[in-house]
Length: 129
Image 1 (tube, rainbow, N blue to C red):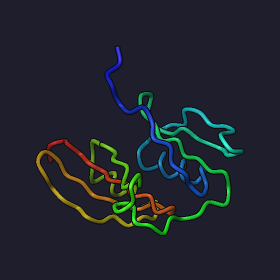
Image 2: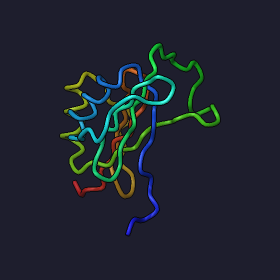
Image 3: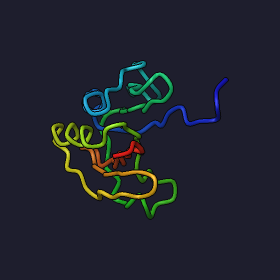
């Protein structure tokens, strides 16, 4: 029996293959499906057996000039839970991204990074350190 949960989030990216490659390297995710998509685009579903990101492109994407935290319906960040925050941060840095906004809070620890498309990821761990 499934709980009510988020199955996937669909985001527009410049290059689904490139985005999928770094997501697999950082989070050890797998490709669940890929193929032609809405509007003549291409989508790759990358994640786990239960949850995934659908990374989509129809070519010639434009970056938004509006800050997401002040735009109704904007995507502020994507949160990913990991077991080993330090090892994940090392992989994020190896992929060429800069981490920021590290903080500890009850009950976990977290940091953030932006990918090449400006999508912000929050990486959080609830494992005891």
